[in-house]
Image (cartoon, rainbow, N blue to C red; front, top):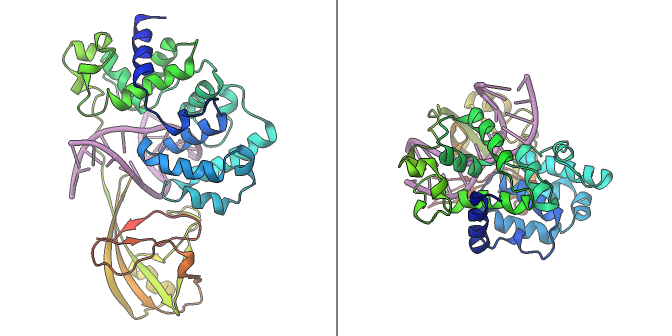
Length: 336
DNA sequence: AAAGCGGGGTT
DNA sequence: AACCCAGCTTT
């Protein structure tokens, strides 16, 4: 073991966060897999409540493999990036049929499992000496070595470094140690170098240039999108359409939305009342949606009872949640 | 309000 | 290698 490795591992032993998926007295590959897939899209704090609900309802591979996609999506609802949930269900069924993957290569063959997740599950759940690189490891690496690259070039160097520095006797703990350092000490802003266990190994710290790494990426170019959304209501029911493949939120039910001219073409020119504006930002899109209430029973829509919908709100004193999509799952859009 | 971060998939 | 997915946290 190198000095670098022992310094980090000793630090982790004393400072590891107490997370739900680290609690079990025996390591459960299913639990590790679920936590890793959820963590792909967001942070520990956001995942925990979803993870606990999920594991209560789907405690085993078998219970998840038998569940309907619709029900699984309900438990995913709010985590976003719903295609990953569908990939996960497909992969779970593959594992139930074929048995558990026994190598990084076999993990990679499952849909929704990329380099990071394959390394994480193989090492943490199965003790396979596999390296991994996530955003934390990439940042830690860039600072330790003053690597000036960005994007895929930085990632490639970080993978090389992670493989060279893997602690093969306990790869799962080692990998979690690197990520824990990035998440709690070597943070994007205001890193706590004063309490870092490996600052003496860090070129950026030694040179006083921690803030310069990783190198900044070019600013993203925003795309502004303007939509109208028509909330059809008739006799206490709400009329929705299903997003088609290739559209945003494909497969989900939502109020008709689009350019006003498109909506007029599809639904005529019904009497309608403007009820608010939604602003929503996702990836590089700034989406502004003008919301209208429409009293109509247009036959092209599928009609849902209020109790099939989640937190539908079409008027906006204060901040209300407008949820346009159901019954499976949908992003939440906040009224201004 | 803007910037930054995030991992898999596709081409 | 660059873009898409249809989001969240931090500043």
